[in-house]
Image (tube, rainbow, N blue to C red; front, side, top):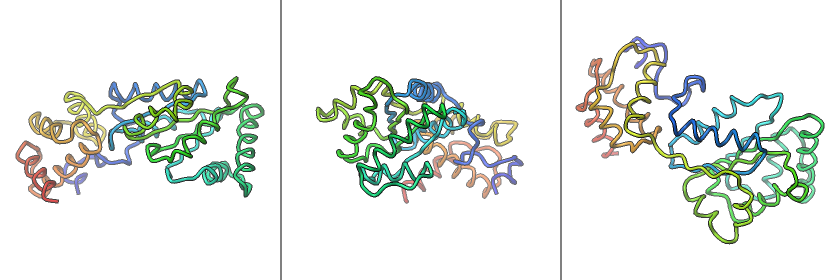
Length: 267
């Protein structure tokens, strides 16, 4: 509907956008650079940010940048895993049937990672998303997971991705041994006003637009509502585009945005 009405090649503001077409703001580039550093140094670190600010998108971009001949990427999104299930899930993703006992599965995983590193010259990159929901037991297990050869060398990189509560949790004294092992801790903030304008323009350009669709005032109103959170920007822009299609308007102004935001408040 949107694509055909505006004559574009693709629909903007969707999660399906290819990573090569992503809008890479300064904050996004900083986030990816920190994660790449964690990978290159085979270390543990965490990235936090508000819901919808682009953390998972940055992880997706990181994955696509990694050489599959040098890295094995493992993504975990179930924050309710217990330590035993954690190792079982890791082994399953490596395509290896896990042992029944937790201690055996843990040793099995450690042998697997070492074999990958020493014999296949590959580094395991493990990303634990929604890490702010991890239990205390699971966070403690992560501490032991990274304790290879008494800290002399690590054959893997471990990235914890979560909401701001993760930073607060890690500040607790009980988790100090984990934070001491963390080389990088980064908080991804929302877009600035100008970055929001650039983001909207970039999305439209990638879709195939050859001219402006949102007025500057409309984009500023979207920013005021979304507070720079890219997912919220996507939601409002998509709703505004649909509203424009229904009304057969080629330009979206503050009237469209105000109407859409009032509908959001009623939901």
